Length: 200
Length: 200
DNA sequence: CATTATAAGTTTACGTCGTAAATTAAAGGT
DNA sequence: ACCTTTAATTTACGACGTAAACTTATAATG
Figure 1 (tube, rainbow over the protein chains, first blue to last red):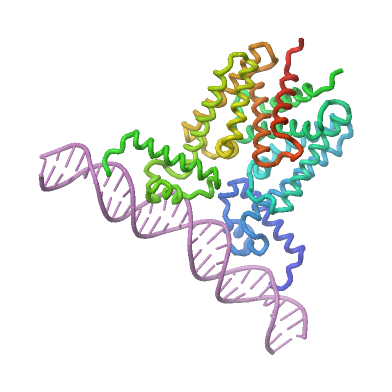
Figure 2 (cartoon, each protein chain N blue to C red; figure 1 turned 180 degrees about the vertical axis):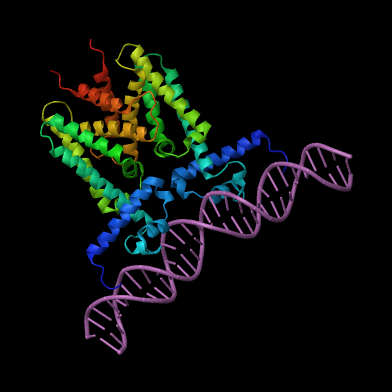
């Protein structure tokens, strides 16, 4: 069916391929998934995906960008669901954790995997920045609300790094079996916030 | 020169190959390094490494194990260099950070990369456990010294996760440019320790 | 010593990968 | 009706990991 292919059709094919890719990447890791498999999955010949994506790396970037978008969306929803800075922070943190644990393969693809030429994929960069902005904004609320002391961006990164570190260690199975991951997160947040609390 | 090959010779070849592999893995990532390159690097034919390693994954595991061993050694030295629990903790933390930043490729290979059948490589498991034990021991000192409150293993994991999280985000270039990584580490440790401090 | 069994190392070969290039075929525009 | 354009397929290539066959040099045996 040559001649044509509206932008909508292009988008539809890209979406379908991304969905298949995300599932297969999650199951077997991106390296283990072949272009031929992806093509078979969509019922097309091995070279067809190359009309819609530059190469395999481009597909990976698209999958990661879509992950960041859903991630950002989940956090934005949590952000808007509360107005009190503390509750808002807790809601965003819960959304973050829920996403990381519920879509752990996507999360690993997004954060663990360091694509060398990440900057070449503007969609990826934009989606990733969008997610980070919410986290910073959430911490800003707590500082402005007078609950804690410090530069909001620094505080946001403290909480983010601590949460991310625990999550990747948990997902990699590197935590000691004696440590309950959710208790680890709770205790870490509590300690950091207590440590940053404004002196009464 | 067939017949013979003492254990020492085997070990020597394995070491040479591991060193070449670590350098090349660091430069280009493990996936981009081929068995043929490694063989050429050692001046042998492409199949020779297969006498000393089961396959490419086995080489990667050996490289990671050797990384964990050097990492553990560095932390053990720091641990022994101080007797006061707080100074000891700081020394171990510094050793950890210095290793992660100074051998960032090895660190990423060790922690970022999740080899699926990690348990199949006992050397790797042992070296990895050795490193973790020091971190837990270091936190135990602070708790026993009465400086902070809590389960030593949990406290160790809190500090570990926070440090590791900041480091991997830094190494992946995901920290905001406005945030100074070393200040981030300092502030996080200070906040956690303040938050865990025993009430006077 | 000459012979032979064995093990180190190389060569060859296979199936699979990502993808470039050539080819085919279907839909407008004229 | 014909030509141009382009989606899609087919074919083809070089490189990969590694199995299997082969070569070669020694150490043990008679």
